[in-house]
Length: 248
Length: 247
Image (cartoon, rainbow over all chains, first blue to last red; front, side, top):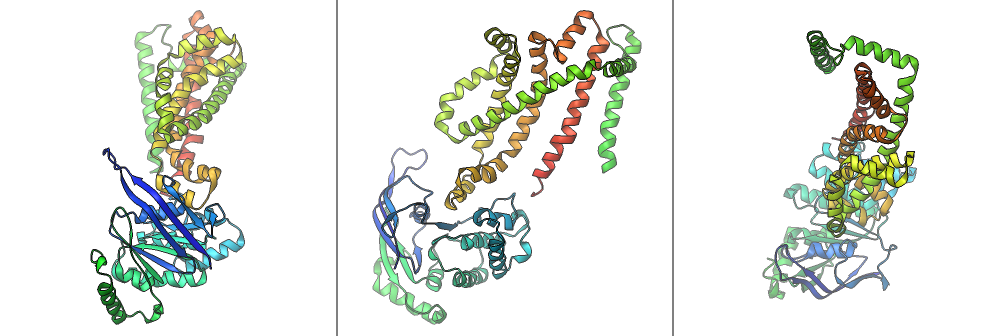
């Protein structure tokens, strides 16, 4: 079994124009089983995005380490990232955006077409991002992250601006695509129901300085997670963990 | 649409020529020859090969110094725009170089390096460089950090990030620097040639000035204007178009 260890001894955040800096993380440890889909829930501003950026290697301004199977983080641990915004290059078509990441060999073209078809985007293969709706751009961003040969897929509230029906649809698509391209997923959200439908494990975080409030494994099959199950699970969670009241 | 886009500039140029013609008739002096006289001089200068010889030298100096200044300017501008520390340190240098008159740098280059081609090219580059740096620096400050982060996460590497993420964002600034740069270099090249070369348009115009040959001066100027329009229509505008394809 492979693991991803995150150990943040100290991560300070200095707000612009303020002299005092406050710690977002101090002595924060979290390890991920890479076979699982882990959801992270926490109040806004608690440092969820910062945590993902540290894992992604974008944010290097912290003391501590991110290790993959006891190796220091290096180029052989690849991550892909679905950001809150799609972050597509506007001067490249859908196909060219994804080809930039995985190359333009015939085999990668096939892989791209397959994923885009699954996400209902095959017709938009040669469109520029500006000609797509925001929902489509998000799906392209997901396709890019999924086809990349990464071990870990980071997702930062990827469905936040979609309405409930479309978000549910997007979650189903995500699960379908992950079946074809299995990856270790770390999924940040503030939506309890979203986390409960997707996760193998939910980690609840507190406000700054960020601490783990609860770490809940979910073993129920995803297909069996209907509305009744959701309500019962939430009720038990609430009873067993009174410290989670800020989340509910 | 296509008709009016060609018609309007033709009309406005014709009006300018008409004003020139009328003025030259009214004033009737040797210092303002009519468009016809200038046109004849131009044809004669082309036929004799003299104009093309000197124009060739000027164009050669223009191209060489333009590309050197653009490549250096984009690199340095990018560096300054991306690093606030480096920018703060070198900002005062930039202000100094921006404000040294072209005449001063040119004379200094000739005095220090001698009346040689390298000195001429160097003088033009030194005059042009600060403008490119300033324009590209503004562009580099505007680069979308989110896209750069994306490139970092997907491990695109420096070269691919530069080629596919940074340079496309800088493109409008590079075009702006190229346009203002071209018109600036034209002006500087002539000064540099006038002061220290024995060929080129600047040298010829200096000669015509001493001979008081106004129609030749105007004929050479017209050949300039034609070349500038050619560069704009044949090179810059198509470049603009291809770059805006995705919008």
